Amino acid sequence: MATVGICSMLQAQISQPAELAYKVKNEAFNQSQVDSIARFMTDNLGPRLAASKMKLRAEEKVVDKLKALGFDNVRVEFASDFKKGGWDNEKNYVAMTAPYYCSFAANPKAWSGSTDGLVKAQCILLEANDTTDLAKYKGKLGGKIVLMPPTREYELSFRPMAKRYTDEELAEMSKDTRPNNSWGRRGAGNPAAKALRNAIDSLIKLEAPLAVIVGDGTFNIPGSRGVNYKVGDAEPVPEIVLPLEDHGRMVRLIKSGENVEMELDVQNTFTDNQKINNIIAEIPGTDPKLKNEVVLIGAHLDSWHGGTGGADNASGCITMIEAMRILKSLGVKPRRTIRLALWGGEEQGLYGSKGYARNNLFNSDENKKLPGYDDFALYLNMDFGSGKFKGVYLEENDMAYPYFEAWKQPLVSLGFDTFSPRKVGSTDHVSFSRLGLPAYQFIQDPLDYFRAYHTTMDTYERLSLNDLKVNAAIVAWLAYSAAMDNTHIPVKPGFPKNPD
Ligand SMILES: [Zn+2]
Image (cartoon, rainbow, N blue to C red):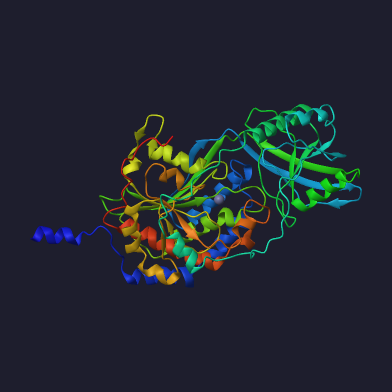
C-alpha cells in the first residue's frame, strides 16, 4: 500500500506554487525590461538578414547583452552551412526623372547586385503572357531599366488596421476539425507560370539591363524580398522593390505612351560568410537525474533587411529574453535546464533550428537518434508577431493537453486558455515537431502583423509592449513548469523516424 501511495504522489503533471506565479507576474509587470530590450533589439541592432555583416554584428551584441543579464553558457553556436553567403545594402537611391522628378521609398532585393554608381536610363515595361512573347525584347534591354508588370491590383480594404481574436474565433480554433481540416494543404503550383518566370530570368541574365524594378507593398511601403544567388555565381542584376503605388504610376505612364526615365544608385556588398549561427543561453538544471533534459524556448534573430524586424521577429526574441530574465531574477533552480535559442536563417528556410535539430537531436543522413532527442522536454516558439498569447497550437498531439491543462492555471486570468489541435507551419517549431517532438507555436492576437511583416515598416512601432509583457510572463511560467514537472510530454508514437 505504501508503494502505491508514493507512486500516486508522483503524478505526471503538476502545478507549481501560487506564490511563484505571483512573483513571475510581479516581475513581468512591475519590473519589466521589455521596453529597453525592445529598443536594443530593433533600433540598436538594425536589420539582421541571414549571414549578413549586420547579422554578425547583432550576434556579438546579443551575446554581450545575454551575458550582462547573467545567463549561463552564453554562446554563438554554428548551426548550418549557407550557400547564399552574406549580403548588405550600403546605399539606396531610387527616383523617377522623366516625365517629372519624384524620389521613391525603395528597397533593393537581398542578394541582388549594385549599379555602376549613379545610373540614369529609360524604363521599359516587360509584358509577356507566355515564353514566346519574350522574343520581342531580345537585344532591347541592355542599358535600360526594366519594369516588371504588376502582379496584383490594389484593392480598397474595409478590414481594420489591427485586430484581436474574438471569443468566438478562439472557440472555433479549439475544435478538432479532422478529417476535414484544410491546414497544411498545398496547391500544385502552375507549371506554365513557372516556365515563364524561368524564361524571364534567363532573358534578364543575358540582356543585363541596368536594373529590374518590381512592385510589392502598399501605402508607399516597399516589401522585403530576395533573389536566387549562391556564392560563386555572377553578381545578379540589381533588382529593386517599389511600393505598388510608385511602380503602378510608372507602368501606367509607359502604357499611356509617356517616356519614363529613372535614376538609381544602389550599392550592395556580398560577403563569403556561408554559415548560419544560433545564439544559446541557459539557466542550468539542478536535478542530478533531469539536468541534462532541456526545456527550449526560442525565436528567430534574423530578419529581412528592410526595417528592423520589429514584429518579425524582434518581438519573439524580446519575449524569450525577458522570460529568461524574469526566471533569473527570481533565482529559480529548475530541475531541467532551461535553454534560450535565438535562431539564425529562419526567413531563408529555418536554417538555424533545422541545424540545431540535425546536430543535437536526429541525424537524418544516418537515420539515427542523437543523445539530445530523449532529453528534449519541450520547445516553445514565438513568431506570429507582437500580439498577446491566447493559447498554444498543439500539433495534433493529444498527449500534450494534460500538461498544458495543469500548467495554465495562473495564466487563465491573462486570457491564456485556448488549446488548438491544429498544426501550424512556416516557423522554427516545425524543425522539431516534424521529428515527433513536443514543439509548439503560440496562438497570438494578429494585431497589424500581416500589413507590416517583411516590409520596411516592420520596426519598433510595430511592437505592442504590453502584449510582450504578458507573453514573457506566460513563457517564464510555462518554461519553469515544464522544467519542474515529474515527466515531460512524450514524443508522438512511431517516432523518431526520418522526416525527409
Ligand atoms: Zn518570422
